[in-house]
Amino acid sequence: MDDTVSVIIPNHNGSATLCKCLEAAFASRYPNFEVIVADDCSSDNSVEIIREFPCRLVRLEQRSGASNARNAGAALSSGGILFFTDADCILMEDTLSEAVNSLARNKGAVVGGTYTEIPFDDHFFSTFQSVFVNYSETKRRTPDYLATHAMAIDRRLFLKSGLFNEDFLPILEDVEFSHRLRRAGCSLVMNPRIVVRHIFNFTLLKSLRNGFRKSMFWTLYSISNGDVLADSGTASKELKINVASFFVCSIAAFLFLHSGSKTLLVLFILVLGINLWSSRGLISAFYRAKGSLFAACATLYYTLLYPLAVGSGAIAGAIRYIFAPAK
Image: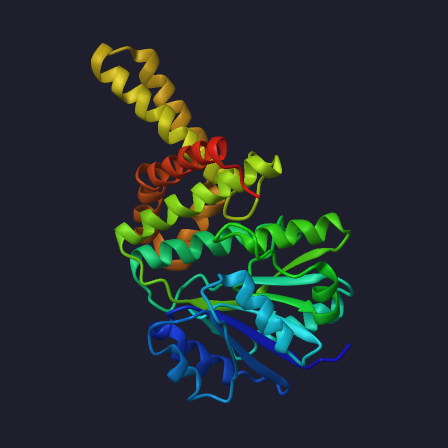
């Protein structure tokens, strides 16, 4: 296998993070790589930033989405290995080396990585999200999907796979791609040592909006795919239990306040306890990342507010499916 790596980065109006992304990519210790940026009709100064680096630039004629951009970048690549990442991700110096070594150990497989626990912008909501993604994506060595923030694949296998689906939802194209590869008999391997540092810049509103949007599209896709209850990365069984627990506890608390029934209080405590036990791995990850105070605050946010956004997104996704099923 040709061990030259083509780093492929789709970009649309990513000027706020693109320079940091490219600086990190070119600081890689891996000796043999190229960087290809597929610009998806940016209206900011992204192209000017890209041209400051020794990248190969692909400019899409019209706004086409991340799948199209990744495919266009892959078409221009010359490396035997494709490494997909995003314009708001910062590669570590050994990310590419770890990806190449992992591919060599797992012949014929697709290898993926995840976010660092601590993001580039180490603020509460960004760190909450980064720890959540890191834990959810790495808890299983054989994952349900591999994300395109850190995905390595042999170029020949990628071309044989049929590429990313360009006629798909605006997100989750990596999930659909992973599922298609797995059905074709290809192994997916998660290597938690392949990491990128993500730039979230999350506020409370952005965190909740992200939870709603991803849940909506994930539900839309999952209903079509017949795996709504699957333990799938960030759409984990823990998160689904957490959302169900939130709504059951909310109803029980409301009825208890109006009736004073001790049965409802017992139900509230029991369901809350089951939820916390189910999420103990994630809570431990919060603690390992930033200590007890962060873990306490992150757990409160995860159990008391975040599930409202995720649950609302799931309902919106189910409604959208009824009227417009996912392709």
